[in-house]
Structure formats: structure tokens, C-alpha cells
Image (cartoon, rainbow, N blue to C red; front, side):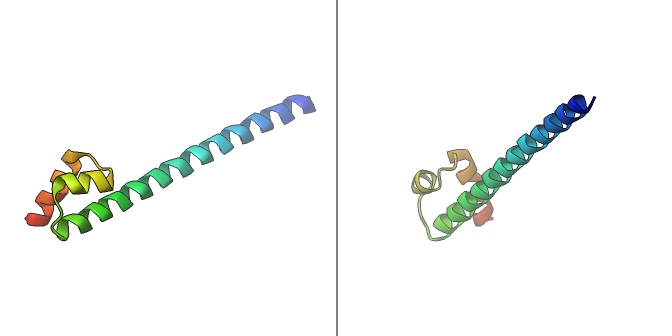
Length: 73
């Protein structure tokens, strides 16, 4: 019986660890995206072209155009 309980606890711990790794990766990606947006906003504010901003921020052209429209509004 103890083996069953230990196995269950080990599976639960493994699942929790996997979920924690998944959540950490998600937060890191969100932070990276926020950094890219901040960079793009700065480049656009300094008068850089959309193409230059796309190339250096690694955002999509659509995302950069949306940021540019918000800055000019």
C-alpha cells in the first residue's frame, strides 16, 4: 500500500514540476515579447522605418504597423 501512495505522490510531484516549468517558460516569453514591443516603440519614436523596426525588434510587420499607428494617434 505504501508503494502505491509513494508512486501517486511521485506522479503528482512530477506533474507539478512540469506545470511549473511550463508556467516559467510562458512568463519568460511574455517578458521577451514586452521587451520587443518596448524596443519597437523606441525605434519608431526615434523615426526609424517600419522595415528597420521589424528587422531589429523581431516583431511581425503587422504588430509594428499597429504600434506605429498608436504612436501617431
